[in-house]
Image 1 (cartoon, rainbow, N blue to C red):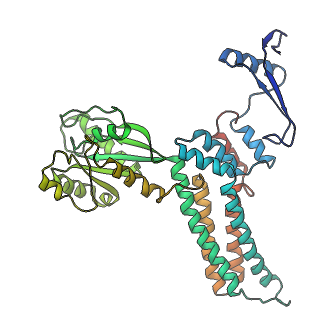
Image 2: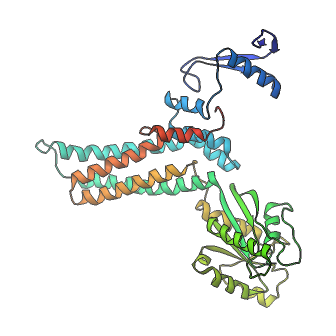
Image 3: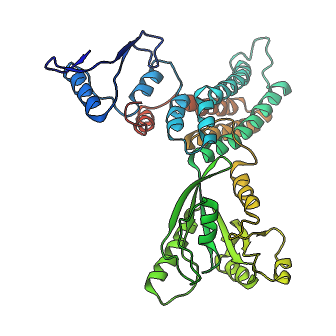
Length: 394
């Protein structure tokens, strides 16, 4: 029986006891299981706080688990990533990180780095002993292998980051090119207003969807053109603003009007090279015009669905590097791996010329960068930032 501060019964439920150190946090924990309902749970919380409990801070349970060595820092972050996953693939990658796939790779790399450091430090510290005071080719080969592994890990972590964060995809083109029709077709529902009147879309419209396991934010915007209409001018300004924020831009033009493609490329300048060009309305274009679509430009019909599967693949493949990642990652993980890789590369250069002191220092810095990922070396400020982003409690 659960009772309130006055001793009156609130509910009947379950009490479960988890004994340290086998609980999630590594501490003695008691869980109360009630029947649910906002009023009932609030009464139970009020009673618990009356008897000496307090509400948990954001991420406090995961933080306690980390501080008590039940999980490392990357696993703690994976809990938040698992809760916030926007697609099935992102959830699976987050669970892999929570299970220790990423952490194990970091530890293995750290072990390999330690082995190299031992050889370098031995050559430095015992020059008079029966130890070669030069770094031999076998040690350099180990460092080469570690450098290659770090490069691959950066690519893998970058895919994990993209899977976690998703991508912003902007539909850009002239008025009436079919941007809103394409947005509706990819979203699988009528989200944008479609009319034959050019300039229907004035403001930006965002739709969340999942393509091949990757969460995307698809953005429809005003068609690019000069206009005397103040509202349309603002819409075009916002479209150009979104252009700077997008991860991928679908440059859409009417297959019957190839001149639009050339003018759009000229207008965007160097940014046009970063766009995925798509010729729309092939169901309406003349055969001669369709045949004139340049190589590398996707030909689709947003109205009939022709070519949309190829467009989906063309969107996702570059973002994920041709495959789903083995684990989820965050921006700080990618940055730490890049720092470790840069230090190892610099160490290779120093050790090749037998500059042992400089090489040893670079290897030490590389080890620190790797240790930051799992929390072996971290700062209180970083911990506070990480756990403050968790949902309340967990």
